[in-house]
Amino acid sequence: MAVTRTFSIIKPDATRRNLTGAVTKMLEEAGLRVVASKRIQMSREQAEGFYAVHKERPFFGELVDFMISGPVVVQVLEGENAMQANRDIMGATNPKDADAGTIRGELAESIEANTVHGSDSDENAAIEIAYFFDDAEIVG
Ligand code: IDP
Ligand code: MG
Image 1 (cartoon, rainbow, N blue to C red):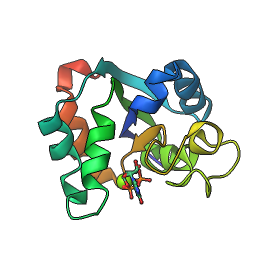
Image 2: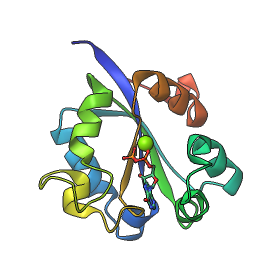
Image 3: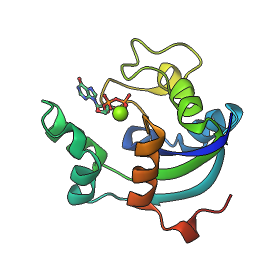
Image 4: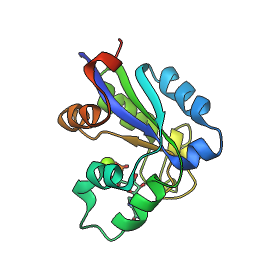
């Protein structure tokens, strides 16, 4: 296995509950290293662009409203097969289906306010990292 990078967002439900550290601890305990991190307030345009792949889904408008409802922490994570390692520690999209011990299983509020985003492929990870970070901001 190779050391790769993936993209993560700590969502507004987590920053509101002061869980940035709790989420990051679970990521680190899963073998991931935070090689870039910044707390931002996303604009509507930025959130719509980020989630453009979901724009035909019925929950798109509410998802964008939620993602701009408070600050988020965008991160680049590095580790062995980082995309899959992150998806594994995140847990299922709906916290009702997420295993105990996963971030969503332990911390998520609902299928929408589900605490974290994680890229779903290495290709999308590269696109999503470039959407929020310049190369110089990533220090491995
Ligand atoms: P993922 O975050 O596990 O990759 P996706 O299907 O890519 O799940 O959905 C993106 C985000 O959209 C989810 O994390 C969640 O915040 C939101 N979402 C997904 N399905 C629903 C739904 O049925 N109702 C409301 N929000 C949803
Ligand atoms: Mg997804």
